[in-house]
Length: 187
Length: 187
DNA sequence: TAAATAACCAACAAAATGTATTTTATTTGC
DNA sequence: GCAAATAAAATACATTTTGTTGGTTATTTA
Image: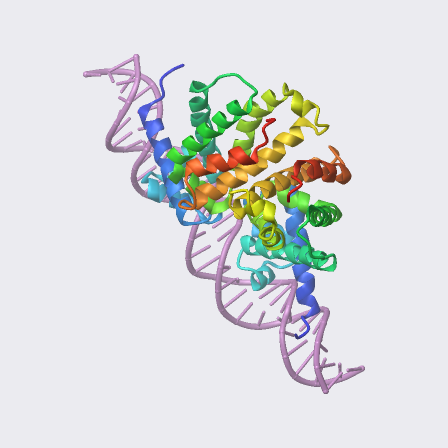
């Protein structure tokens, strides 16, 4: 893999930063490419050298967040279908979100972007649903595994969103303990 | 309340229809006001007489959907904090969604719009959360009522989304029976 | 049927996008 | 370090889209 030119990395970073800054202020819809360039202090033609439009930039930004998280996950991986494993996974996710709180706040407060929810679902389905397939309690429940996963993930994500957007409502430890109680033992 | 001019009602309706049609085809981001007018067969100046921008139109559209649903709900209302009541509420919601499937498919497939999720949450919080406040089982669980509501609502919505967007995966009766099993008795 | 008013039409200014070309500055690999 | 490569800046421009206005036509209301 060849080394990427420093200038490219740099413009990418400042474009991400600029977009995040602007999303904190206003709805994605209302952000113009020229706004982004103004904040990022780059020429507009440079923007077009990197991305087709602002949507393209947003996708790249979310993709990067996803990779960052997946890497953190890899470092902590261990195999099990127990609830203990499941809760540990959630702990890592919550920790990651907390560390990057300002970023996630920007993205979510602005429009609860569907793309972002897709990202979480994607991660979750890859790392959780697959394991549940081997869980006998779940197989015997007569409800499709996929359906069970979607149900509990929906709940988890919805609580997570609430926690991120309402900073001081409860701590991450509290969030985790609530989830522990709400998620059934058999998962 | 004075009667609204027929022409106003008409333009509103064709604007809603046009937006829904376009959202079926492409992302909201990419839709231009001139596109909407072209499909709706109205002059662009007429659009501006009604709405500030396309976002404004979307908000009005969702607001109308919400009112439609709330009216249907009113007709079926009865008071109780039992799970039976809760399931009946869900049944009405699912029925409503099924009747207006093409509309909801348009809105959701295009970008899982945050505004729309807000609408469901709004409805739910008004009609469900308030009742849960009187439920002793929940009060004794040591988890904030708000948190419990958010958790189960998240699950319900997430399954609902899946059901709407994957038309033939399962019937509404199946959806309802799955939910019945997944939602605990104490709610 | 007359008065009110919504929608149409046409024209235009301003904003924003998207592209192409040349010049300047930085990075890379030797 | 230095030369070659290349990214970013600067500039200019055509095009698209937006947003507004004033006059005309058609529909609705009462």
